[in-house]
Length: 122
Image 1 (cartoon, rainbow, N blue to C red):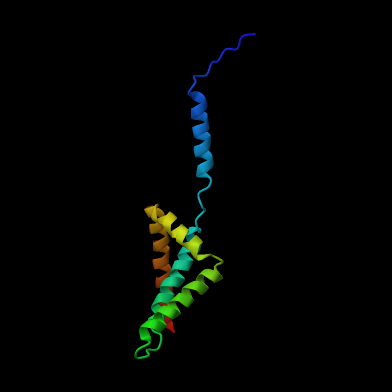
Image 2: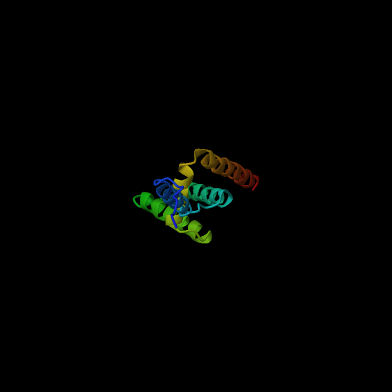
């Protein structure tokens, strides 16, 4: 019995290439969701502002501010169960999608405005 090949010789390569592309697209790390990222960034910006008001020691002021900010940022990530690496990867992912990053920061600005309004009432 004679076998007839109806597919062109390059079709197998094309199928393998499409399969490879499909599988490699699924390996992209899933970023932190917009709502959670905006919450984390809001807390980080507030922590940065707060760290600037650490009591001033004459020569240790600069060091204490950097140390306190590092502690604040680490605790924010820990509270949200996010590693520093996952946070950085998510930021990079959103940077490559400016329209989504803009949405994140619109929420951050809204949350900070709400926070400022609450603080000013006290």
